[in-house]
Length: 177
Ligand code: NI
Image 1 (cartoon, rainbow, N blue to C red):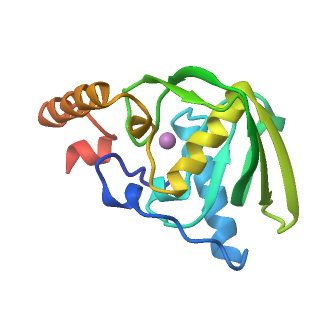
Image 2 (tube, rainbow, N blue to C red):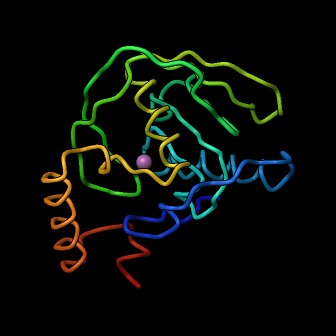
């Protein structure tokens, strides 16, 4: 089931998400729904707070659904090592239509549980490492616009304000209501 994507400045995006304690049917459904929701918008990643659920779950697919082997679903992910640096443009399904360059680690190692409850370790580099860091930030209530220079952040916020006033921000259901 496709779920509603919460957009900035919704408060749920700013809460620190809680660890998953049991991978029960609700969590399995959440993961499936998040995956479907991400693909419905051709996104490359989605964190549970973006669908209004303050739990430590993320889904990532840097192929946006093109490569069936590219889907990564992580529960309680943690970065255990990082190295190097990269700068590249980022967007976010919760800040639709806004893109800015963000500096990130070039490589990260992540430990997590997979949907079967098994411990996994993921080594990510380049764009995948960027996506991982972006999604894990969501679990801390951090958005990519927090990682750009303050003067640019002000410009983005003003732009969003104007777009909200024009009815040109968010998803169809938001704009309607
Ligand atoms: Ni995002």
